[in-house]
Image 1 (spheres, helix red, strand yellow):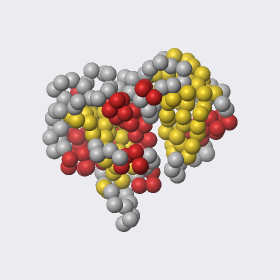
Image 2: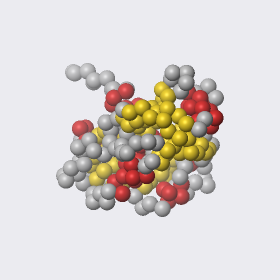
Image 3: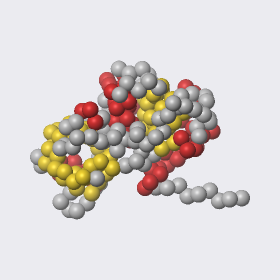
Length: 237
């Protein structure tokens, strides 16, 4: 990873607690699916998935959830609001579209996101679209409520992106339930699919368990969670 100084172009609240951050970064490329580290003067470094594709450089997008004023994310947003530049380390991560998974035998690429894990999957989606990838690509995004979503106009302009709310009131006209239910309903046989999954460790492993029941091969799934929160091996009986 390279250490660079980026210009802060925009910090904008785009729903009830998610900020879209636009940075101008002095790098030539990265691979869709990778992340960066934001350095704070306190010495803390915070990882965020890059939410845009490399063809948009030098502009780069982040989507940062601020749960409360005690969170590290709040410190990051406060710093970005008050400063014209920020120190970064970029890029990092092996869960990306050039990891060798997209072979001719792949029937479909599943991009599966929970919450602000959407950023990583959006980067991949945009990059595959820009590259005119010829295989089938489907992006599934799960949120707790419809109010937790963002970029809704962008989502609704695509016919291969599904937004699923875990819970919603009667005014919600979209899909409600568990994210894996929508994926499996649309794709009963996942034996020739590849899945990239982003979200909390519980969301990632729980979703993959259900997708493997529908035929997804264990070695055809990828997530940054595998690196920082590896799942304990199941005991041998």
